[in-house]
Length: 91
Image (cartoon, rainbow, N blue to C red; front, side, top):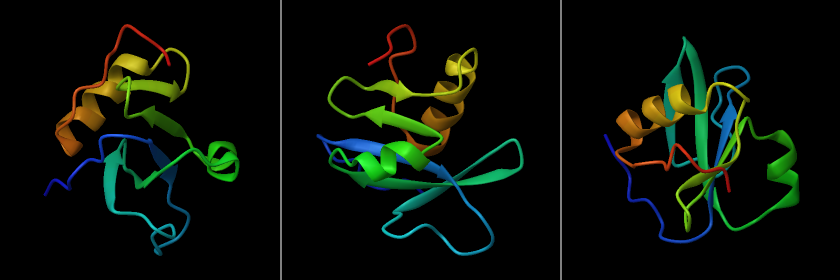
């Protein structure tokens, strides 16, 4: 099931610890048998620090992602959230 993606702000992708979803998460995705919560928000330094990935919704690029895995994560997130992440650019 897909949720409505905001037009501005960021998607913070945070690996879930335990069984409880992260506060304000709107969706979860599964990558390599790990569950990640997706939190749409405007820029927040605290979320920047704990996020595994950050997607800038204005540029549709990663602002933060594990180096070397950008294409893989862009593909997996795209399939599960129904969005296209610009894979050749970093925000």
